[in-house]
Image 1: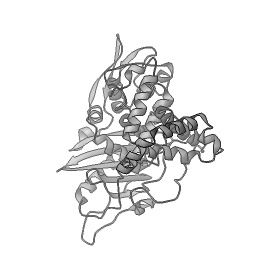
Image 2 (image 1 turned 90 degrees about the horizontal axis):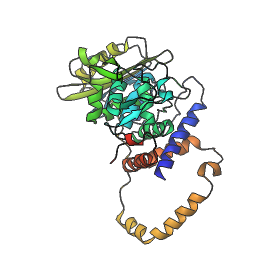
Image 3 (image 1 turned 180 degrees about the vertical axis):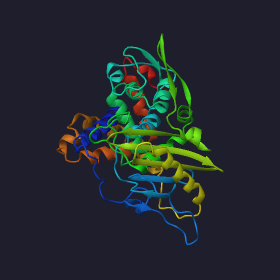
Image 4 (image 1 turned 30 degrees about the vertical axis):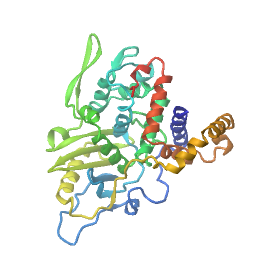
Amino acid sequence: MLRTVLATAGAVLVAAAAMTPAAVASPATGPAIGGAQLSGHGVLVNYPSGSVPRLPKIKASAWVIADAGTGQVLAAKDPHGWYRPASTLKVLTAISLIPALNPNAMVVASKQATTVSPNIVGLLAGHAYKVSDLFTALLTISANDAAMALAQATGSLSQGMAVINAEARHLRADDTVAITPNGLDAPGQHTSAYDLALFARQGLRMPAFLKYDQTTSGQFQISKKKSVGLWNQNSLLSTYPGALGGKIGWTNAAGATYVGMARRHGVTLIVALLHCPALTEIDAGKSLLNWGFSVDGKVRPVGTLAGPVQPPAANPASSRSDQQGAGQRADQAQSAASGPSVLAAAGFSCVALLAAGIGFAYSRRQRSAARRSAAQGSTAQGSAVRRP
């Protein structure tokens, strides 16, 4: 049941997004997640009356600089604007699939995974690859074929995309719709600088993510006779004191995109940028990080990074009532399951609302159950799904 709901949520999001024009649309008006000031589209900063360094001039359509520990957004530009993510979407793919997949399992690369263009690492169809090696290739050399293989390791590509989009909803990254697991441009796919900061903050909580993301070099075994070198494209790691990780991205349509994380003197900052000129994204990130470290605690934040959706608190009285009426509710659930679908009854008029509602309604525990169910339903690649 939970697997079906999760897969439906992801499929509905993908189908609804695919109907939008190729150009990235503007987000719907309404209260901005993280605070009212974050609904602005220009540069947002609250300078104090005293003297503090002014923001550097950044050539990017959108950006966010935030304190990962406190969640304070120190400054931003168009933080909730919708833009193409390029390979920064791989951060979401990683934080979504790392908990779902067994890192020691072997995944057989499909033809679909190996023919994605550009494939980057060069997986061969029919060859088996270790999940942990695929994550390393994903976050170092930005392997598009590894992203596809990892998503399919959940049981199918559609199931993998359902898990990825469900994690975005769980993190309250409501500006994000993922159509591809690798960030290659697709109609209806978009994210925001704010959402990228949420993904980075979640990654900082995951030791496995940091291990993959901080790998500077290595070898990837393509076959018994062939291997390729891996190097980390995020030069922040080697050129910026205190760097913790990040991810670069680039497509012609998206321009340069970037997520970076760094820690100095016990303060951890996140920078996210979208639609930058080519080869400027990391230097722009460094400039914002420098500014952030110099003013953190001195400027009034323009908003906050939202926390993940939490499960509803248990109600003791309701629990007793639930126990007394369990049999009756089971009968009602069986009847509801055999009736017409909600989407059909609504005439498909609330597709987007349903998808968002499903995402918000399900807690971490329920998503884990969905993943366990996905594992049980998986066939050839089912052994890759992590067992709780």
